[in-house]
Image 1 (cartoon, rainbow, N blue to C red):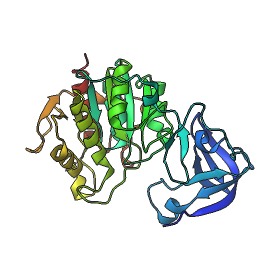
Image 2: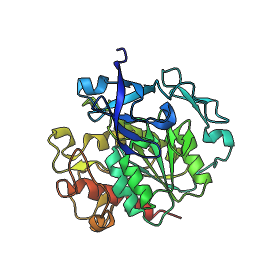
Image 3: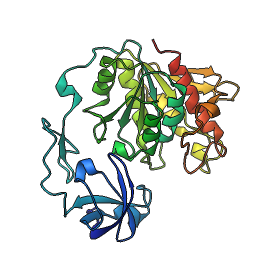
Length: 327
């Protein structure tokens, strides 16, 4: 299917961060990534990708700035960069990769790696790791620009995440890596005490057992196990999901555990009934999740902590299991 582009003029800047701008083009909500397309200002002539909004699909109801015709042409690449992200696509651009600088650990030596299947789990997982040096690694399967995540901005403001790593095809993070193996090795080499892996916001899904972005958790778990780390699964569970396949413990969790090649432990809140297949699991007292997450923007499929407490408690439990493994 071809790109659906339209020409327009920036009519307002609604919100501006270091790596993300929320704006309006001819009055329509749009998102721009200035490290990729250059700075943006009111009055700029731009091209926007409208396809996801037009089809009612996963960009959250907004357009994406594709090119800034006023001030975003002929931008110089990042100094010293020559390896492309999004290669051989209209958005390919060179980024310096961590592997080029050579500092990668050979083994993880028991480093706990928490594997999330949806981005909303990252907040409670990291809240459980307060005081631990945490690296966040984003995998493909959801949003590719890491800077889209409001959750990560909140975590960094609370000093709950120290560094953010993008694994191709993701981009726009503190550190860029070719794959999850090298990303985990980079984290270990830089003395991080725990790593949280997840897809970005807006998980890709087809309603099938294998056709969803949550299986990125398998890749993270298998990489951690192969490199002598300690993978922990954050179990997706919901009391309120209207879809049968996600109510209770999601079919995502079962698919992930079925496909893991090494040992992975599922974190689970004590006192909550679990399906018999959820093994091996480690139960922990997660009753403190609300106070630990106080002030964080918890939301999952539009539901907050009062609407779907089991979801956030289970993710917090995974963080606690990982915390107990910190060397």
